[in-house]
Length: 139
Length: 375
Image (cartoon, rainbow over all chains, first blue to last red; front, side, top):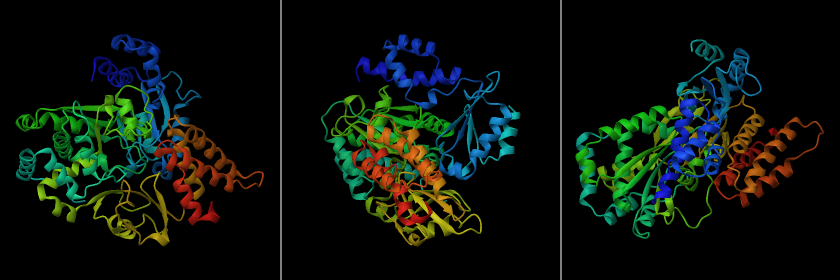
């Protein structure tokens, strides 16, 4: 591994860090990562835009609800509609005031305990509409 | 489920001692003799892969443990890393020694927070003396940003290099030119977790007693991870191990190997889930109340989302396929798109760069073949 490769190997770890700190990677964060690693901003940008998990709308609470087959069979779509209504999620997938963002994601690897969602790093399993709403109200 | 990977401290020490007393060729010979294959779905003989990396050009080499479990319905790797992280680490140490590498990456999806913490703890608590005997290799826990395609080994390698996770054409195979252009061994979590067991019991006994982990989900009573010998029938797995159907409704369909796998109807219940059929061991069970149209559409949308966009047949194909399915199911004009859907499916299978595009419509093909009238 040469010096340049070592720098590039830090692109994703840095992006993940920026993501967990501020929720969603901002343009400023991408520029500062590029400066820190002395790699072109375009290199950071093109990697960052590839991964949907790095473009989740910034919010204090980022809700990621699984929509893949097993959770879908467990009626995750109804839970999605209920959360959307409860939090008044708009077209940009964010609640008024920007406290919550709601994203449908693919498999979280929790198919034995579906339907599943994650709020930031916390996992919520075996959801029902009521359980999901109660979890949100308790935040 | 039985704790397949639980070893007593004495067993664990004796198996690692055996490894330390053997040279790389002997270790690989043992792996080959055990018949261990890649358990992430591809089923490539592990011994051959290890040998390819070992005999590749000398210099820096890498081992990667693939814990980017993105296939819907699959959660056996999560089970292993949460419960038996040290088995995985031992497997990695043995692999490092066998192929002559000094650095390993565990590529774990960021959603597996509990698994990440358990691996981190196991790494910290790993006896330093033992680590030293293996040459104190560097083992990096790499939190992947996730995405189905990252499970593909060349895409996974790209993302560690800080680039977009796009699969690469082969040859060269990662065993020749992988991470940072160096020979790289990529193995699934379950494959590596099985390695210490080989040295515990010996290759012949291991092969005899080998048990594959199955992730069973969907409309069964007890969803979960089950271990079974290859060759177990679908019926036994669903109706005995997983406790039969969840409700009084009858079995309709099982998707084996994840969304990129195959679909089997009630007529296939006696199918033996043997090598080459079990794939990654995922079984999603659907009962008779499930709409096949809905299922097929959900799968198509999944692949359209997860296509990395590198090659046109997959990028355009998965999107077009989803749009055509929607139109077909709405069927306002009364036209039948089925022929064109099947043609597109064939084109994607034949021309896509990697497994994603090649297998995206496999379940659709199986379902239309078995339940033609319903779709």
